Structure formats: structure tokens, C-alpha cells
Length: 201
Image (cartoon, rainbow, N blue to C red; front, side, top):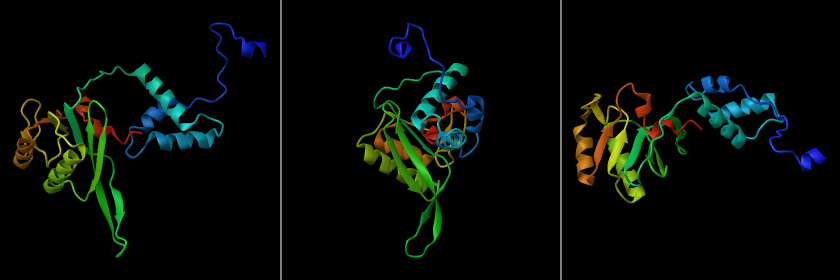
């Protein structure tokens, strides 16, 4: 009891809860549709007395920072809005007919605050792409200096590292709102938008 109440400096009692295999967790997260929530449920299935979900996520983030060198990006408020269709489709059920349609999830995320707009659309075609942008800007109540998108066909007609081809309608929409379009470089994962990674957790 004295040791518990008056532990000497530097004394760290042994962990009482089992740690997951972080290498396995990290590898599994690269698979499509796998999230930390699913991996935590699997972990708790093997270790019912293990860590809770929030602590599990914190420990994973700590472990990941120890193995990967990353470039921290800072964004000024109102500077960039990251846009993309993210993750798998979701089923949408018609209550009258029972028909099921697959919907794409459009995500727009402010760079500085991570303030997020999400909307289901039935395609990634140009009308849905433009419509989702209009709804996002209306929701935000303002326009950022730049829209940062992945190389989606509705937005970028020709992927290029230095001079990407922007769809004419998309460019006209940006001109109407007085903003610019920045396309991620092809085959550069670090250029991917924040919106592209919103399904990680």
C-alpha cells in the first residue's frame, strides 16, 4: 500500500492490460474497409479486460508516431477546403418501394479546424460533384481561398504534377465563387486530401 501511495520517482508499475500487436493493427488498417473500431472489437474479443476504445486509439497513434516520419502540415484558417468522395458506398433504402441504391459519400473538410461537411450522392459524376460543392459552401457560409481535390475524373481531366487539367465546369464554378482549385499530384499519397482519410477511425 505504501508503494502505491508513495511511489518513488521513476517507478512505473508493470502494465496490467495486454497490449495489441501494433504491427498487425497497422498492416490491417491498409486493407479496404478496416477501421480502428473493428480492430478494437477484435482485440476486446481476445482480451475482454483490455483497453477501452479511446485508449486503444491513443496507444496506436503513439506507436505509429514512433515508426513513421511524417511532415506536419499547418493550415491557416479559411485557407483550404479539402474535398473528395471517401470510403465505400452506403446503402440507401426507399421506404415505399424497398429499393436499395448505393450512395457515394462526399466529404469536405476545412484544413485548419477539421470542420466537416458530409453528404450522400448517388454518383461521382460532374452534376453530383458540383452540387455537393455548392451545398458544402452553403453549409460553411463562406468560401475558402482554395479547394484541394484528389484526381477525381469529374474535377480533374488530366492528372499532372505541374499543370493538371481542371474540368471546365469545375473551373467555372471556382471562378464564380472566387476561389482556386489545387489538385493532388498523381501517385503521391502524402498529397491526398484530409477528406480521403476520414474513414480511418
